[in-house]
Image 1 (cartoon, helix red, strand yellow):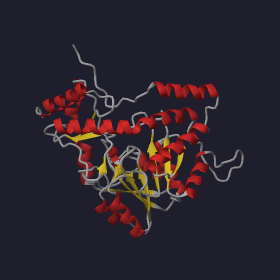
Image 2 (tube, helix red, strand yellow):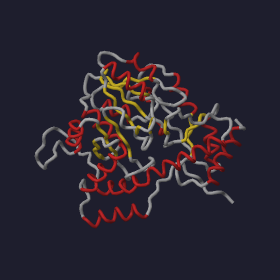
Image 3 (spheres, one colour):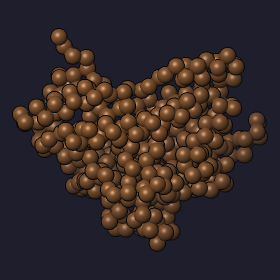
Image 4 (cartoon, helix red, strand yellow):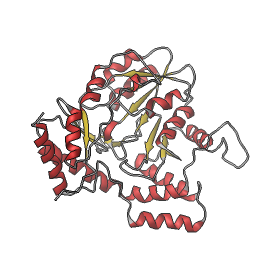
Length: 360
């Protein structure tokens, strides 16, 4: 009998989510309203009471964070190339230029030792990505930013509840962006949250998301329609209540996998860092794509995050060579780690990996 496939991700849509959505539907107030405001207040508790602004996606969160901090034409923003394209797109959409640096292959995050070589007189900010749920080395990055008077934007799309020595991801820089896409550690169906250090920047983001106005028909600036709906906020509020429990389950699942897997490079977590394992990402020494196909045939969900260096995309087409980024794109593979996995499913994942990797 063929075993049921194990998905790479599995959003948890519980009864309380349905109840919260139905409450909004019955109210008739479907667009941005009291649920959005409540979601912002409640999310603020996870990020040391910083200002929070809810928007319609993680990409919008990044874009408006940059705009609200004054990033624009003529500026340069240092970013990693080993990430999703939205990290670079958000910079380019402001008119600024993304400047790509290599990663530390152990953490998959931006290598802070390479940042200063990328700084020019046009550099305005560093946009850090906390990839796979592991915070970047913010101690070093904050020191560099202070030394060169640069802004810091944290792309925390995958880092809900992650931390360094107890300080939450999203609270180290001037702004941060979280995503609530359905595969993230918590979801609002679709949506994003911007976290700000400065109240004036937060107010500007609120203007940008709503056609440039706080009060109806009193448009102060040219803005967008990037609002979150109360329906999505109701989902997010309910999911947020479970985030800490789900984070612990992801960490437990990751520990189990790391203890069981053989002959692959398992995730690394530096001392003092809290990794929340949005993805559990291994490195396969050779024939990664064939290995991934074999896992899929065995019913083990998997995916490559990310198969393409962003600076090599046609939209950026940079000639630079980033050796660690290239190595990562050729060898990484993410396995199921979501909270819904049973012990039997985890054992099945590790047994399949160990069996197939021996055949490479």
